Length: 185
Image (cartoon, one colour):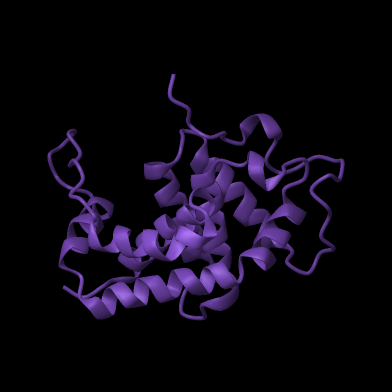
């Protein structure tokens, strides 16, 4: 099976998530380990039929070395632009510092913004829609709305003067609606 754009996006998102989880000196080894050791997920119980997102993780087990290299290269390209992406995100999420945004949501926003800015083959609406769909699976209940709101704000007026994260004012995504990291009680 060849690597689809959905698979590439989902796997890249997982690596972008790892960017904030692992020390930078371990990141390369962690990405390699991830690509070599993906496990089969549990299938959804409701109707017994696997969702396409579930299938992408099953198909990872059959990726070629070239496909693994393509996923890693995509993630590394996103990493090379993280500072620029983060500056733009921080400038549009008034009242929110990046370290307060749930890591999964931040990874999804970073990847979608990367696709919008640097991947001419991905339409803007598709990048946003796919980020929201992944947020439904990987994020909290509030994640899809938050990710959609931030991305809509980022693309609505990309030439607008960016504000600092400390700027006062109302955001399209109120602070109380932004999802926080999931914690284990």
